[in-house]
Length: 177
Image (cartoon, rainbow, N blue to C red; front, side, top):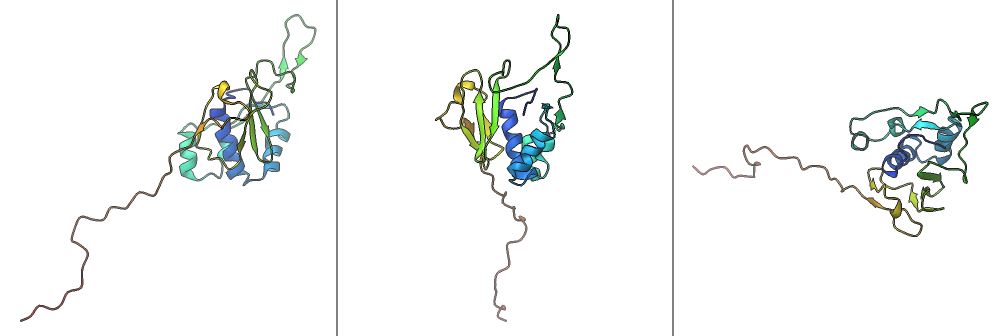
């Protein structure tokens, strides 16, 4: 799968993890069909529609009011000045010129590969919280190293304040007369 815009882990991982966990309910095959089969030429951008089905607090935290749909790549032809005809541009394992990041979907998670530094990368497990803050530093995404992410703080339900009016009733005995 090729995505033209914003290939950084901080952008792609929350969308891909959220899509796997919520929109596709853990069905990796369905996620792959959507990402690969429905857009064989690739995507112009991955959008917040991948978060459909996510709980509203999670979606709100990830989206931050910036809703935008995924868009398929319109044109994968590259005009080579001086060539008789446009060339078909194909991204392969050995021809990734100009791309900074690669993402490989495995049964256990998403392998993140900084293409300028490594041939392989660490795998981010599918059950990773999509609200984690992932580093975009290529030097941090090396095989055998921990996933460079800061997990979001755990949230608990806010305590419901009790009215400051009268104290709760207690058992009383009748006054003596």
